[in-house]
Structures are given as structure tokens and as C-alpha cells.
Length: 196
Image 1 (tube, rainbow, N blue to C red):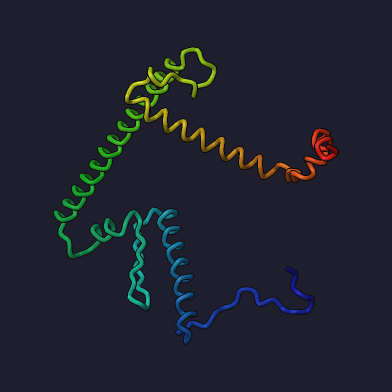
Image 2 (tube, one colour):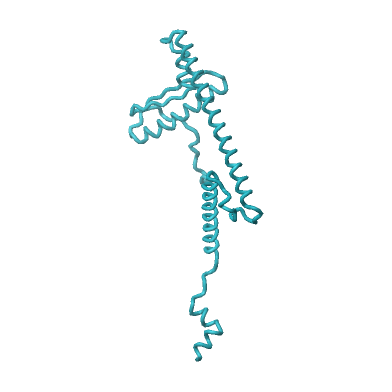
């Protein structure tokens, strides 16, 4: 939207630094300023490689914190209350937690690989049971084992749902069907019945 000619632009101007009298206005200002402060802190950390912690308490007493690499790591590193061996203990705890997360990730990857292999075997069994039939849903269910039948049933359910959705979509696109009276009037056999 263009500004009418002759009206001056407010542009960027300095806002008076004073307490906002309206609580809603104060809350909005707090949120905007807090996000701007956190953005500046993260940029400072990224550009300069500095360890940064920013802790802000709202008027309601809520705590908002940002830290790079993390608030706990920076506070442990720079807090004068902790001795040097406390820092080493914290690093060891962090290392143990990281190693535990890596073990959990590897276990999850193994489970995914095992499930993928199981599904491949089930697919192979279904193809074998298909026995030269043209479509996979024509598979001989007697040839399937206990592991394959539940998967086959779920696949059939998904196929039924997809076909149902497709039929509904086609039905919405189709023109409105002719009424029965119009259809009977156009049918030559029904005309003969009317004459008789």
C-alpha cells in the first residue's frame, strides 16, 4: 500500500524507554524484546564463537533462558561456586548421557533394520503365495503363514480404503443422475407399457 503524497513517513524512530502503563501492551513488548534479545545472543554466539547465557524473568515470574552451547554447560563452566573437580564430574555426566543416547540410537536403528528385513520377508512370502496370479490381492491365503496373514489383512484394508476414497471422488465429479421418471420416459419399453 502506498502512502498518500505529502504525508511524512514515521520511519524508524526512538521509543521512549519507560514502563508501559497497560499490562497487555507490557506483555507484548516483553515478548517482542525478549525474542529480539535471544536472537542477538544466538547471533553473537554463532559469529564470535562465544559462550552465551541469557536469562530473563517475566513480570509474572516465568523464566526464559537461552544458552550456547547450553545454559547448564556455560553456568557450570563459569560459575565461581563450582570447584574444578565439580566441572570434571559434570563433563563426565554429560559424556555418559551422550554415550547412552548413542547406544539408544544404535538400538533403534537395529530395530528399524530388523523390522525392514521382516517386512521384506513377508513381501517375498506374499509374492510366492501369489502363484502366478495377476494381482497381489489374489494371493492364496492358505499358503501364507501366521506372520504374513496380519500384514496381508492390513494391506487389504488399506486397498479397500483407497478404492472407497477413489469411488467417492469419482462420484462427486460425476454429473447428477437423471431421475427415474425421465429415464422411464426415454425408455422405449416403458412407453409400450404406458400404451397398453
